[in-house]
Image 1 (cartoon, one colour):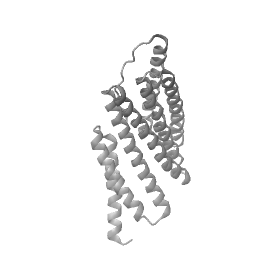
Image 2 (image 1 turned 135 degrees about the vertical axis):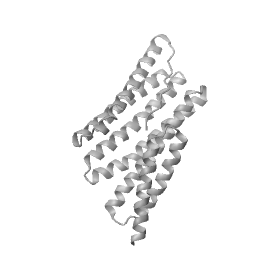
Image 3 (image 1 turned 90 degrees about the vertical axis):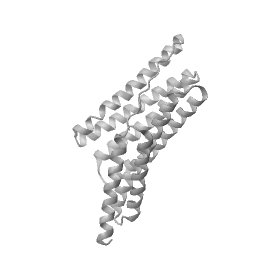
Image 4 (image 1 turned 30 degrees about the vertical axis):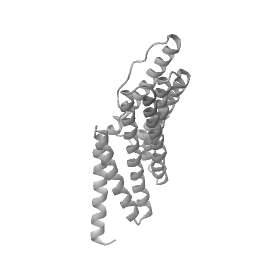
Amino acid sequence: MNLWKQILWIRKIRQATKYKDKASVTENSDRAIKLYDKAISLWQQVVEQEEIEMLKAIHTGNLRNSEANRCTVFASKFFDAAISLSGRKRVNCLKKAAECSLASSSIRMEAAEIAREYGDLAAYHHTLSHVYLDGAFHPYYLAWADDAVGDRVDALSNYKKALSTLKTALEHFDKSLQVEPSRDVEEGRKHYLEYMEWCRSGIREVEFKMRSGGVKKKRTKRRRK
């Protein structure tokens, strides 16, 4: 790679990182998706141009994380849409949100395995915590869909499955902090605890409905990316 190509290559890496960072703090879903699209396009170019296998793998991990994050934004977008809908339209949106979360979990697993392969245990456990976090939102959204059609048994089962998966996610998150303590990273721990409380609240509400036919109070919070 000549000097000029190398300069362009470095610029692409910096710009891809910039787009990803902006997308992660953008509240507008459509804007975040466009930023992730730009980051993904640049990461793909970087991966194709990289000649050193180790760096190619690392850039691939960055690519997969951006792709996974894009999926979580779509999941949140479908969930937000479901809140204002009812009947079959609400169920369809919730199921699409669940599909996006499952896709995100699958995509992100490759990034976790790359980190493990190259011995970055902190990154491995941190990324794996997000693999399980994404995986937990799959049954969480399905629980909402089940509840929307009055299927309390499956709703309860899915809330419990989501809670169990979140506990595993938190275990890996804590392991990442044990390997490499970080105040900035530790701040994210409260989100895991919040999501777990969402599941416990869902379990309590469904159990209440099963006993007395009570009405569930809507929760309109969006998942943080």
